[in-house]
Image 1 (spheres, chains in turn brown, blue):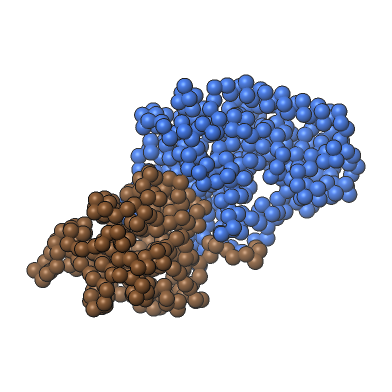
Image 2 (image 1 turned 135 degrees about the vertical axis):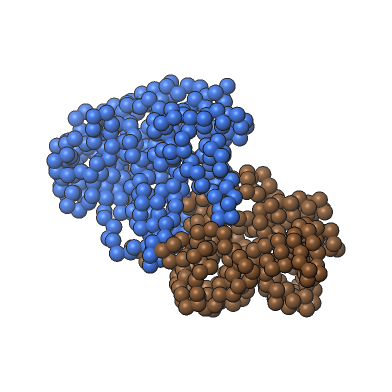
Length: 274
Length: 333
C-alpha cells in the first residue's frame, strides 16, 4: 500500500482506568500510543478489538493530549463489551472526526447548555474548554436532567463547577429519592428557572433525541434565534468521514459536516430527532 | 484526428494476449442470455464482446469489492485492465471518486485500485430495454474518466485516447503490434453510429424527466407514492447493490484491529439504527423513499457528479418489478 495514511486503521490506546459514573454509565480513561488531540465536540471511533466500533465524543479536556476519556452508556453490542473491560486492556481509536463546537463564536456571550443523561459527556469536554476561556465569556449556565439521582453523572465535577466563578449548574431528575434537594421534572423545566439575556446568548443542546427535540422547541419559544442553537446530533456514524453513508441526515453526513449543527442548518432535513 | 488509432482485431487480440503476463485483464463475455465481466486468458480473448451495453455487474465492484479487508497491508495490488465498460458505468465512477478520493480523507484502498487500473471503455452500438443514460445527459460513449474508448468497427479495433494513461497504453501496444491512425472514414462511421444510438435512446425514453427535474419531482412526491411503489419491495437491496453509484458500506471488525468493508444498502432494515434504538428508516416505505432522495435530491446538493447514470440496472434487478422510470413518468405528468 502507499505511504498515505490508512484512514481505517485505529491507533492503539491503553485503558488506564474505568470509573463507574452510574449503574449504566462508565468513563474510560485511555492513553493513546501517540499524542492524540481533538477539538471539543469532535468525535472518535472507538474499537473494541474484534467486536466492533462505535462513535463517542470525548468527555475529557481537549487541552489534554496524553490521555483521552470517553463516557459510555451501556446500550448496545459494543458498549456491553466495553463495560466489561478492565484497566490494562487495549482499545483502538480513529479520528478525531467531524465539526465540533465553534467556541470562538461564544466570546462575549452567555452560554446556556441543556444536557440530558449521557449527553453530559460531550458537554463536560465543552465545559473544560469554556472554563479555560471564561474571562472571555459572560456566564455559563448548565441545565442538566437525568432520570434518577443515581444516574446523575460527574458529581465531583458538578461540585467543582458550582465553585467556579461565572458558572452555574441546575439539575433535575424525573424520579427523585428522599435525599434529592434539587428540581424534579424533565430537563426543559430548568429553562423556566433561569435568567438569560437571550440577545447575548447562545444555547447548546446535547442529550437523548426526545430531550433534544423538546429542548430545542423550548429554546425557540424563549426567543433564541435558530442560528444560535447548537445541537450535537446522534446518528449511526460508522466510518467517520462521509463515505459509508450510515449517518446521512438529508444532505448532510453527520460524521463529516456535524455532529454539531445549528438548528437553522438542519431544521429542513428529515428525521433529525430520530 | 491524432487521438484515434486502429489495428486489426487479430493483432489486438495478440497484443492483449501478451499483456496477460503483466496485467489482470477483465472484459465482458457473453453467457447464454447475459453479458458479464470475466477474467481474460489466452483461450477466451476472441470471445470478448465489444460495443454492447452494460455487463450485469457494475464497474464499481472492481474498485469497491463486495467485501474487502482495509487494514491488511501485505497484499500487493495487481495491475489491471478493464475492457468494455459502457459510459453509464464510467460516469458512475465520477461520484465514487468524489467520495473516495475526497482530499480530506483519501481512501487508499480505493485509490490504489483506481491508480492501478487502465480503463478501456466502449461505445454502445446497441441499447438494452431500460437504458436511459441520455435522459440524464450522459452519452452512450465515453469521452472522459476512462483512458481509452474502444470501438470495433469495419473489422478493426479503434482506440480513442482519452487520458495520458491511455496515451502510454498505446505506446505499449505499439511495441507489440502495428498500430495506425484511424482513417477519417471510420471515424465518420463511428460518429454516425454513436449519434444513431443517441437518437434511439431519446426516442425510447420520451416523457422521462431529466436529472434537473427529478429532484423537484421526488421532493414534491406525496407519501402515498412511496407507499404505493414500495408495496412490492422485499428489502433485498438488489437496486443498491447493482447500482454503479451506490457506495454505502458496513465496517466489520476482525481481531487485531482489522477492518473489513462490506457493501451495504439503505434498503436493508436497520441501516440507520443507532445503539439507543432510534431508527429513522425503520419503515420500508421510508427506506424506499430514502434511496430516491439520496440519488435525486441530496447527492445533487452535495456533489458535482450524477448519483444516477440511467443504466437501468435497478429496474432489471428488482424482483418486485418496481420500475423507477414508471414512477418518474407518473409523477412528471
